[in-house]
Amino acid sequence: MKKRIVVIGAGFGGLGAAARLAASGHHVTLVEQLDKLGGRGYVFEQDGFSFDAGPTIITAPWMFDDIWNKAGKRREDYVEFSKCDPFYRIFDHEHVPFDYNDDEMFILSEIDRRNPADKRGYLNFVHMAKRIFDKGFVELADKPFHTVADMLRVAPDLIKLQSYKSVYRLVSNYVQDPFLRQVFSFHPLLVGGNPFDTTSIYAMIHYLEREWGVWYAMGGTGKLVAAFGRLIEELGGEVLLEAPVERIVVEDGPDGKPRATGVALSDGRVIPADAVVSNADVAHTYTKLIDPKYRKVMTDGKMERTRYAMSLVVIYFGTKKRYAHEGLLAHHNILLGPRYKGLLDDIFHNKGRLADDFSLYLHMPTITDPTIAPEGHESFYVLSPVPNLKSGISWEQHASSYRDAIMQHLEDHYLPDLQANLVTEKFVDPRYFRDRLHAAQGSAFSVEPILTQSAWFRPHNRSQDVPNLYLVGAGTHPGAGLPGVLSSAKIADDLIGPA
Image 1 (tube, rainbow, N blue to C red):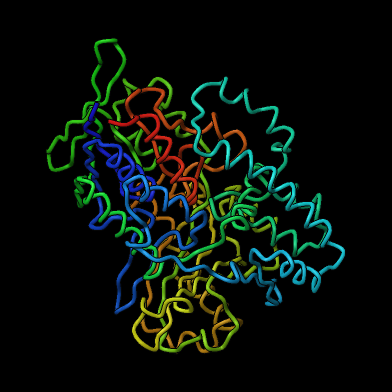
Image 2 (cartoon, helix red, strand yellow):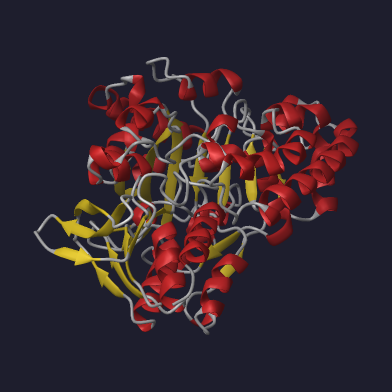
C-alpha cells in the first residue's frame, strides 16, 4: 500500500532513505531545517570557493549505484566519481610520508621502507580484516538488530572474529612498528571512534577500501547531494527546505501503541504521515521531537547516559598559490603528531582539557578537481579531532589560539607561506555541530562506536517506542560513515516495504 512518508533531515541517511522509498512507490516528503540539502554534507560557498562541510571520502560507490538502479536510472548520468590514488598520504610526526592504496605489492613496498619484518604480519592482518568484512559488512551491515535474539545469533561469529578486542589491539597482534600500527588502525577515527576503544569489527573499513577503493565526487560532495535532490524530485518526492521540525506528532493507536501520525513544523504546518523516518540526530529526535510520555525505552536519561563520539575543529580555506604543483601533498593527507594513545585519551575520555598537540586530516581536493576554486587557486580543509562539549572546554576562549596553532603548523611543515597566501577562510568547532546540526554534546559522529553501543545495543532502526518511526544516519545501526548511513537507509526501506 502506498504510504505517506515524511523524512526528517537531508543528510546522506535521509537522502538515501527518501530516494529509496520514493523508488519503492511511496509518497515522500523530505523536510530539512537548513537552506540547502546535505546535513553534515552541506556545502559552504565563499569567495568563489566551494567547500564540502562534511564527508569527502567515498567508499563502496556501488551503494550509490544501487539506489539509482532501484529508481531505474544510472548514477553516472547525475554525478561522476573519480578514484583517488593514493587513498591517503600519511605523514609521521617527523613529516615523512607513507602512501596507502589498494595495490598490495605497492603497500608492501611502503612497509618495506619502514619495517620489512612487518610485511608478513600485514598480509595476515588483511586476511583477518577480510573475514571481519565478510561477516560485519557483507552479511550484517544492512540487517536490523531489533531483538536480543538477533544479537545472540551472530555472537559466536563475532567472538571468533575477536570483536572483544579494539582495532588497535587487533592490528598490534600482526604489526610491530609503532608508526605502522597507527597507519593500519586509524580508520575508526573516520566514523568517530577511538582505535583503542572501538571494537575490532571496524577493522573491516581497511578491507572495504581495498575491495572498492576511495573515490571523490567531481565537483565536490555537494554535487552528490544535489544529484540526490534531483533524483528524489524526479521520483515524485517533495523537498521542503528551511522547514525545521517542531515535533513528531504521536498519538495512541487502536492497539494502544503509540503511532506517529505526522510532523509539525515550526511555522505551524502539520504534514500527515503513515510513517516517519528521522535522519535528525538520534538524541534530538527522541528528547526534542517526541513527548516523553511516549518514550518508555529511549528516555531522556538513556540519551544522557549514552557515550557520544568526538567532535571536530575544521578550518576551510583557500589560497592564491597552487600547492598541488609542489608534489608534497595528496588529495587526502593524514598528519600524525608525536603522540597517539595519549592524544586519543585527551580527545575521547573527556579530561576537560584541549591538548597542545594534534593530529590532522588535510583535504586538498583541487589536486583532483580544480573547478571548485577560482582559477589558479587551491582549496583545502584541515580537520582536527577534539573532545565533544561534555568536556567543558570553552571554545569562546580557545577557538582563536587553536586555529592559529594549526595554521602555523601547516605553514611550518606542509604549506610554505600559507598565511601570506590565504584569500578566504571559515572556522567551525563543536558549537557548530550542537547549534546548527542539533548534535548531542556537539558530537560530529553521534553515538560512539564502542562494542556496548553497536548492533542491538545501538539505537534501533525501528523505534522501540513508536513502531512506525524509523531511524537512519550516524546514530543508529550500523553507524557513521557513508556506507553506514546508506546501509541504514536500505534497512528503513526494507522495513517499510514497497507500496
